[in-house]
Amino acid sequence: MRRGLSIFRARADDARVVLPEANLVIDVTLRETIDEDLPILFRHQADPVASEMAAFPSRDEEAFFAHWDEIRADERVINRTILAGGSVVGGIASFVIDGERDVGYWIDRAEWGRGIASAALAAFLEVDATRPIFARVAAHNPRSRRVLEKAGFRLIDRVVADDGVEELVFRLDGDPSL
Ligand SMILES: CC(C)(COP(=O)(O)OP(=O)(O)OC[C@H]1O[C@@H](n2cnc3c(N)ncnc32)[C@H](O)[C@@H]1OP(=O)(O)O)[C@@H](O)C(=O)NCCC(=O)NCCS
Image (cartoon, rainbow, N blue to C red):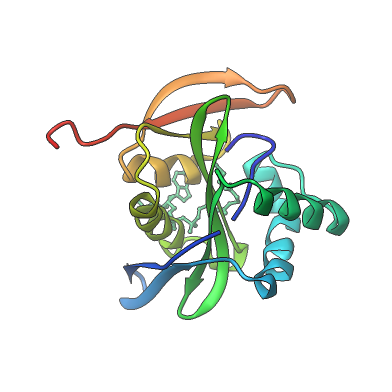
């Protein structure tokens, strides 16, 4: 996920996740982001552990809401709020940078390791069928790398971002048989 990440808009798609440890099933649902979600999403991105993992600096409240104003004014951005069991657990979005469509996501740290990002990405890739679609992940973020690889993304490049962070560039192509 590139610095300057955009976040979140649009409609619902569902995916079901089997939790291996508890053998439970939860519903992971995407829906259009509403104003009431924003304070929750603000708290997710303010988490210092998550921020370090993503190599993406947390925004203060003023910057966060100003960023959302920009996102909502940009018709190219596709945003979804991620719900698990009916609760807001994160966000996923695609956005255009330098002519390429990128996808990014963020999950509440309390919910990590439950398969939520994987399910949300699978559902989102049906919402946004643009191919190729790209993702950038800090080299020190193997969880996100795993989420992308499970969705079929392949590593195509390594770059050093403006802030000096090494990033892995992933790409997902369309199904060549279609
Ligand atoms: C990265 C992030 C989205 C993952 O969300 P999540 O819901 O915990 O992800 P999932 O549970 O769907 O999948 C995580 C996968 O990583 C694996 N994993 C966990 N720790 C790992 C590690 N240290 N090394 C390699 N794989 C690891 C898990 O086993 C799982 O794979 P599996 O399904 O094959 O078992 C979440 O940690 C997050 O929001 N981080 C902060 C923001 C961020 O980094 N966003 C992505 C920026 S590109």
